[in-house]
Image (cartoon, protein in one colour):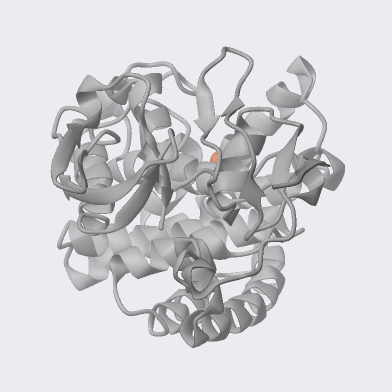
Length: 358
Ligand SMILES: [Fe+2]
Ligand SMILES: [Fe+2]
């Protein structure tokens, strides 16, 4: 067996890892013999692995096709291709309308705005499917518009999970669509800046909440829409901005959009980092503290995502593959996994986590 050393930039799905790969803290990231997938490459990048050995000259076998990662399978589906082209078209149209809105004299045509979201939702099978589609989208330049569209789609799915009446569901979807409209009043270079933000950049960025509120409050809309723009960065424990509001002082729509906003930011690819997998995103929510969010919303949200993957095959952080069998209510990112005839409770295995959905 001959080996070749490659850099992470040369890594591509299908290559086989020749040796066990450890991270800087000496934890096993991937075992030797594992076939690379998009998810595993992401994991390597996440662990700052810059180069490693692969096995040379392996002929591709049918096993490899079955081993396609979950996101590869989604990306290659006809449904996804259709969704992606519709999404691109909708974002362009939505961009024009959003820009008109920042002009104080323009009124809002709610139906036209909502049409973009509802048309896209019709192209998907169910709620979690929307999450999968968005997770597989390529990185876009128009980050703000794409992000607003994503949050709007997620708001609609979440509102359905909450069984909101039709009118409320529409309002929540619209609030998601408009939550970051204040960013359009900020300098473009700042909103799309790829280097680390300076403390003064942060001060400016944070004003998008108040700017958004000012754009929306006199448009004759339900006041919750403007409040969601103002308060979506407030957190229940008072750690948010702009006013450090706590618990009940925060508009419920803003609490919901605050969760979807963070989730979308984590699970979308950015130039400076890859997208996190749903389980990685859930574990970030857990480690950052669920007390930041309203328990009624955050638990419903995380549970629904995890539940959607029960029965799915996953690869663990040590390279082993198994199936998600049961959810741990107290540690949602750490389900119980069946490996052959044995079961592993990830909540009891501190070192192990779900690295990829297969
Ligand atoms: Fe925001
Ligand atoms: Fe946002």
